[in-house]
Image (cartoon, rainbow, N blue to C red; front, side):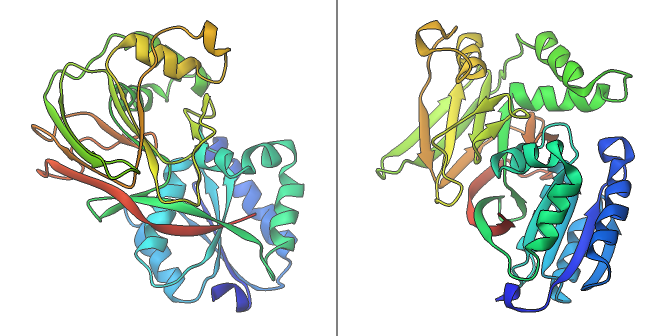
Amino acid sequence: MDETLPPKTVFIYNPAAGAGKASLHLDDFEKLINKRWEFKSLCTDKDIVSEQVRELCEKGYNRIIVSGGDGTVRDVINGVMISTRNPIIGIMPLGTGNDLARALGYYKKFMNNPLMYMNDLIAGMEKPKYRFCRILSLNGKVYFANYLGIGFDARIARKFHEKRSLPLYNRLIYLICIINNLHFKVKEQIKISFKDTESRLYEETIENFKNLLLINIPSYGGGLIKIEDIDLKGNTFHLMFMNGIPEMLFFLFSGKLPKPLLPGRKFDVYKTDEVEINLPHNKVLIQIDGEDFTGRMGNCRKLTIKTAGKIRFFL
């Protein structure tokens, strides 16, 4: 196993994350390691970072620290999943949502005291303790940890990235996007097929709906929603279908208000390990881990999302 070998650490950072704080944390991290083990840093290049990570894994880098947001973490996950090695990953959450870091318990620790958090990571480098996190795949080509959405939240992801250059707090921009697009619906017909944990087959055709959401971790929307019954170590993820605003309101306020006071209308949640979705064309809005993914699969209109494996993260 990779953790029994001497630590070889790579610090991968997004220079734009956290208003440029990632490079400052790199300096702090390198000083704390103090040349105890082989160490290198890598500034992300969005187009090739997954391949760079794969190459580093094959060269024996068995500890990966990612400084950035969910998009940067997803690129690193892709590199690990296409490699033949099994490094242990730590996250310095510097994005807008940081949902995976929240789900793994990193976010509060890092925000409370970044230097102490880094010291703890380094202290665990030699004999690391770790947990497993389930990873999903899209058509066996794209790997992700958080969620995939079709419809409303994909439109929000697109609008947010269009507006995030505005001189406003990112969360405020996100809220504005939600309010401005609250009435958005997917008009097209979409076919869904999956089996639940009882092996019951569901085959549905839906249209004129608000949101189709596959959630893999117990945190959504930058910690806005917590979903307590998702087990990161298991084999199943959640599939949710929201027809309109009542269901969306119920989803958005779940966990924040007592059940009798929840606005909107409850909807069904299914647990599965594989979903097949057939789209009418490649213009239907899709997001993966908060990033607009519309059209990124070329002309492919059949999407297969399933459990692809597990990756190790530092405790």
